[in-house]
Each structure stands twice: as C-alpha cells, then as structure tokens.
Image (cartoon, rainbow, N blue to C red; front, side):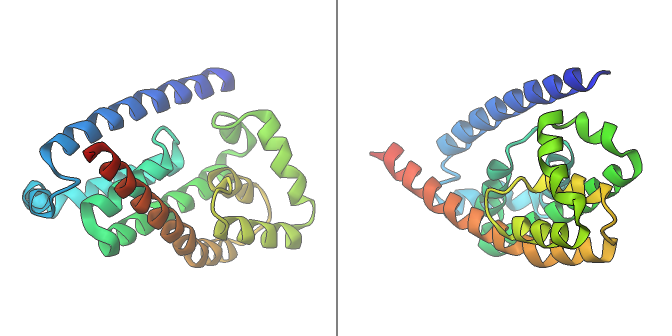
Amino acid sequence: MSTKTSRRLINILTIVCTVIIILLSIYWYKLGIFTDQAKMKAYLANKQIIGPIVFILIQIIQVVIPIIPGGVSLLGGVIFFGPLWGFVYNYVGICVGSIILFFLARYYGRPFILHLVSEQTYEKYMKWTKNQKKFNWFFALCIVAPAAPDDVLCMIAGLTEMKFSTYLLIILLGKPWTIAAYSLGLIYGAKWLVKLMGK
C-alpha cells in the first residue's frame, strides 16, 4: 500500500469515526447520561471493569493510528469516568500509545511515518533534529504545550538519537499538563453546549 493510499484511508476512517461519535453522543444525550449523574452511574454500573480497559485501549489506538479525534476521546474519559479516573485513564492510554509510537518509528523508520503524515510535515519537523540537544528541548516544550503535534513529534523522536529514558521522562512529566488543560477546556465547552441545547 502506498503512503498516499494509507493516509487517505486514515482520513476516511477519521471521518467515519467522527460521525459515529457524534451519533453516539446524540444517543447518550437523549438517554440523559450527560445531564443526569444518576443515569450515568446506572449506565456504567455493569461496565466498571471492562469499561476502563476498553477506553484505555481506544486511547492507545488513537495515538498510534489517529482515526479518532484526540480531543473527543479525552472528553469521553472525563465524562464517563469523572475528572480523576478520566484523567488517569487518559494519561495511561496516551503514555502507552506514545511509547509504542516511538518504538514503531525507531524500528520501521521513515517509511512508517510517511504512512501517517505527509512528506511536507515530515520534512518540516526533521529540520529540528540536526542538533540533538536542541531537539530534546524543543520536543519537551511541545509535549507540554497544548495544540502541539505530539504524535508526529513522538515519531520524529524515534528517528533521532534521543535515549528512550529521556523520551520516557519527557512523556511522563509533560503529558499530564496537556491532558489536564484539554480536559478542563473540553469539560467547560461541553457544559456550555449542553446548556445551549437545553434552552
């Protein structure tokens, strides 16, 4: 499969997943899950073990193969599992996915990355790798900063001489801040949307 075909397939899957998520959100909203805490607890009562496992797997997959919008899955974790456990499950899934992404890039190299991003994007960030020390700092800042292309940079890091211990430390210490920032923003945005729909 060519890189263009694989990227086109991923784009199609992303659109399909987004439509499915929108339809599920409408269904859950009609059930009252987003507006009634008791109904949400009742819905999740028989999913206490399998629910978190499935959710973490979904987060891992969406990091490695970006077919689900990351913001949507972050919001889903907080809505269904609450601020604390939603954060924990998001954190675990994203960190594990980021580690897998690093090793996939390191093992399969440039061809693997080009199946997921365009050559233009690849070249844009590869320019930062000429100086390893500078790239390490650039990578760390991007992991902490919201809206940075984390997944692309995780793959790029796998192509550099960055030690895995350095990579792991940056991921473990940097990801909580972006996850918390996204989660809070999405929670307040979702609450505003629910109030708007309720009027």
